[in-house]
Amino acid sequence: MMTKRKHLATGIALAGASALVLAGCSSDSGDSGDAGGDTSGADRAIELAVFNGWDEGIAASYLWEAILAEHGYDVELTYADVAPVYAGLAGGDFDLVLDTWLPATHSDYMEEYGDDLDDLGAWNNDAALTIAVNEDAPIDSLSELADNADAFNNEIVGIEPGSGLMRITGDDVVPGYGLDGMELIESSTPAMLASLQSATDAGENIVVTLWRPHWAYDAFPIKDLEDPEGLLGEAEGIHSVAATSFADDFPEVHEWISNFEMDSEKLYSLENAMFNEYDGDDYGPVVEEWIAGNQEWVDSLTS
Image: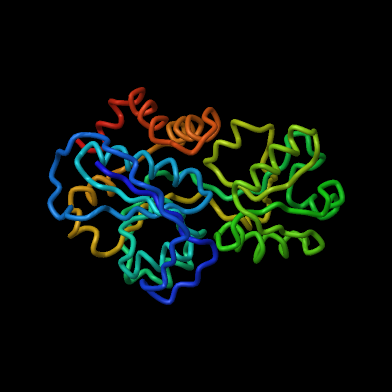
């Protein structure tokens, strides 16, 4: 089936569905898989939103893109920041996002748009927000960071400003641990990971906002700072959230996604194949190869 990928401009403010502004649209990726399965209601592409920089969501989205194409569905992936995704789901521009963290990280968006969203449940229950440092850093706890801020250049390297992780870090962690003298840098997940790699390669100290599950824990010598006050919250679930029309438009896919579960080890394996072992952004062949090595489990997701 034909699959399109689009990228939504960062920082777009959405007043409604008509406010979506696309920064670019790639060409169709080609034919992949035979038409099959019950495609009732599938007279259009499934609009699958993907959070910019959230690798677990990117991995799950490409996995389902391949699975759904094999079953005869067209899928259109759109990369966007967090806020535009929820506004787009509520407004009917998107059908589905696979990376909603609950009960804390994305709770604001669910409260704002919840009446127009369909929570299909958690597919992974091991998600956790973290503040990480290089493995040989001189501290082990967030309670020690303020007194050692100079060792980290008085900086906390963050990710996208619209993310729940940055909100919780800025609103709760920084004041809670007296880190007001440190600069919380708003950047992007790729920029944060580049800084993390550069620092660990050079043997320098660095502190970053991060989360589990993430392939960075396998790729870099890092450790989480303890959070004795519990300000980063407890472990969360990664939920699939759909537009309220999704169940009627794609009932078969709605059922599959509602039953979808993926443990962290399997997710790490897919993330490593896509983002660590592979240097590029044409993930289709990488995902197909990973699927071939996990075919029995993948087949069970639609059986």
